[in-house]
Length: 124
Image (tube, rainbow, N blue to C red; front, side, top):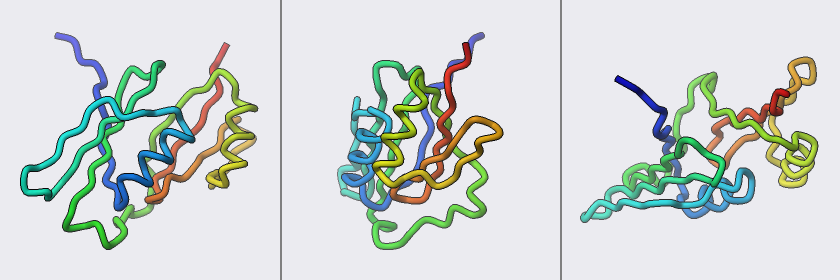
């Protein structure tokens, strides 16, 4: 039996804003979508050419007007990059860097809903 990571779900208030953020920040693009017949939810799955998994953005009609409670926000996604300096410069320009840990050689960006994403350099 084999298990492979498939996707991670996060709930978002503004689906269009989140799709735009993930496209700009991490080159993630929609690869499939699903919408409830009654319009109560919409799912957009994002990936990029380097991804071995997808991010599932979930928009819920009944939650579209209030922020999600992320608790202490200790959970996060993490991405590796082969050009750490260029990624950092891009994210600095976007204004989405929310925490830096130079001693560990990583930093975090924050998406429009407050989710943190760790950016890690490729290890040689």
